[in-house]
Length: 398
Ligand code: GDP
Ligand code: MN
Image 1 (cartoon, helix red, strand yellow):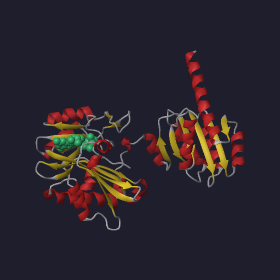
Image 2: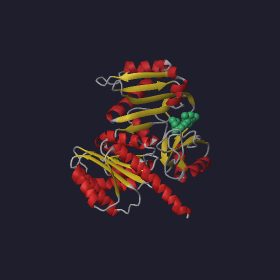
Image 3: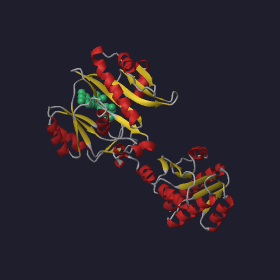
């Protein structure tokens, strides 16, 4: 789960990371009012969306008066911000964060990620802040400082000091940097984060080390033990297809294609997507219904896949071990009866109770296309989808 910048800043500041003073607003009027509360005469208005790259996309504006704040906010609220991280549809702006602007001397990149090779939390930092880490690693790889934290002892002061020195920080700033690094690590560790990124972490003209931007992601499987974090979820920033699935306990990822997939097991789901591509099609989603799926669960998965307007054919691929083909077949039949489905449905069943499953499908009298192998299923799905396209085009042409 991702959270907003202002939320990440509050979380991190509770762990001792220094941040500029700022306030949240839900309307242009409130933004101007909150700027007045903050005081000063220069503010940064920042669109709160779950994506980076806002600066270049017009989501971060420097304002010199309440009037300018009003104008900046009028251009943001209710709009979709499209950055290189949001995809072409963008993300809605419903909240802005107003911050007192600070004079920047240096911009540093600071990230905490899980390093799969060492199975440890790794600090990734660079003296070239402001740029995205991908750009930094392409253009200035020599500037990147990496440091792996030993979980048994946590981030030690000497290790944090070493990072600070490797970034070329002056000795008088090192203590603030140590505090920042230790605060980020503690937040990452105690809250089951999967990523903390501060870009930029800045040194101000008056020698303060401040987190000017902040991003945090959390492990969904550990959210149950951090209720104050899970309540920060903002569904307006999520793919509606994916939040609907998460609410139903299904593991779903929306994609760009038009062949919907209902599969059990992540590995089989990946193989199914690959095979669809091999057959010349494009998957519309990744959906793993898991083991022991009841007919109701299968029907739910069907509704979810069909609620995606891009889906023009559905491929059900089940290899039943713990699952039962007859239950899956019942779920498919139930869903097809409940919903008026006018697109091709291809079902491939294998494993436990496969004969019973096939019988249920055959007896239903529904126009279900059956297949025995995965390749055959994928080819039939792509074929049926193409056929449908041709027929529909003909109808429209007449
Ligand atoms: P992002 O584009 O989504 O990563 O948004 P950021 O919060 O990183 O803001 C983009 C850029 O705006 C930063 O890299 C800074 O250069 C600039 N910026 C943000 N806040 C301030 C500020 O208080 N003072 C100044 N001078 N620049 C700022
Ligand atoms: Mn940033």
